Length: 261
Length: 254
Figure (cartoon, helix red, strand yellow):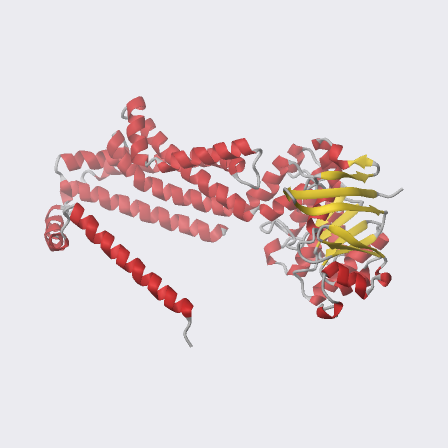
């Protein structure tokens, strides 16, 4: 007996694989990218890293100033995330199908979310640089706006997914909008929302390094400074400390998630 | 004078597609009514028209002689406090405890601030525990609702509806997700509620035998229209055929 479904799936898979292969080759051709050259230069790159990126005793003398900048970056990311999450919650309540006030605000909220989300954080930083100049405020707003877009989107989805049935029940008891939000929507959604906020804090610490290079603040500024003065040993110390911070924040937030979920 | 008068109501979500058409019936205080009919007959929509979770397209529903479509937002809240509702999937706030869920039934009587700040009076709390006691749920009062079984969840749902001190209880397939044992417990509680507290129960059901056994009156719906309205003893196989659109011998009637 032949089962056509399987044959069809196999054929679809073959066609799909061929298309991906073709696209890879065409793209490589168009950009003059050579696979052989790419792979053969990997050992050389590692050799360079091995000889230049060693963390030396002198570079450790810069540690206090690096820590200062690092703490600035961490707190900037946390402030940007927490403030953005409050606004995002309000927008998500307006945007969600379950808790929307009317169609106009719902569309508006979804529109704001998608605009802010789809402009990359680097673009935000460069645009804001023009109006605010090189200072911490620019970095804050770049992080804030990108976070706002993302969190509004995921909060809206969380509300839509989790609180539909209990909202209906509370409305049928005669509870009003604010009571429904505070007694059904928030209790049902808060663990997932907190989880997203923690995720965003992690992401923002990572991206604030990049934003800092552009806006001249935080750890990104330190990175840029030593990079441009070709002090690669300090650069690798900075990179290592960023990695340590990101991993420890991730561990802390994983622990919090385990407790609340 | 009847408690609730449903007069010729029609509901359509899309044009030319009537979910309910020309539904009329009266409901008296303390009645136990079952609504039966195939899936998609409009049973759930009909219940939700009664407490205006769904706005019907035409016709009118009178509660104590007041047209419920004419109610202001504030009066609608007040009206809904008098109509309890029980759901197939219980619709509890699953991360909160049993007692918190029961007290949600009082929110309709509270101001916005009292509700948000969870200011419940001593009597309300006592009443909540009293209801849980009566439903055999006293020892679970501080458990989170996601740790309960289906039958227990439904009893919390009933307590939440009863603490509203309703005149009518709307039950949307209350036993459709429950095993036979829990189903019996829930149906017995509903029967008691209508007999002892004289609260009208309108129950959507899938099981004809359950409807016959518990109710004083059966309403059969098919294609959004009432095809039977009468006593359960008088429900003949011809009626069942009309309601479900197939021969009675092709149905599981138990």
